[in-house]
Image (tube, rainbow, N blue to C red; front, side, top):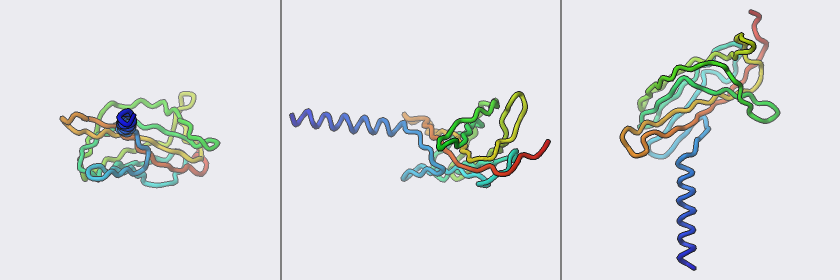
Length: 160
């Protein structure tokens, strides 16, 4: 009986560790002892409709990161985050971010509606980006981590 309990405990620990290895973290800053420290910061916390947000991914760790142009936008509606389709197409290029370096991206706070680019309406938003940790030739070569940051859009859209 004792042997079965030990096997069950060992199996549970392995299952939990396996799940944690594939966990996608969604924090503005991710810190892991030793090697990994990544931050995604925005140039402001408040924007006006139609402005351009600049996000910067900072690699404070000692492993190479890869980021692409793709991002997701969410709007807080009735206490829940709802994804906003941007209808943008993104170039599939990976930008390397070496240890101690950073990479910035300009994000227009606009979405396509009825074939026309419209500014985001006032409200609370979240932007998410996935970065990859490039571990070269190791057995766990690439690991994805999702970063997010919140911001607010205030005021009325400028007439065009």
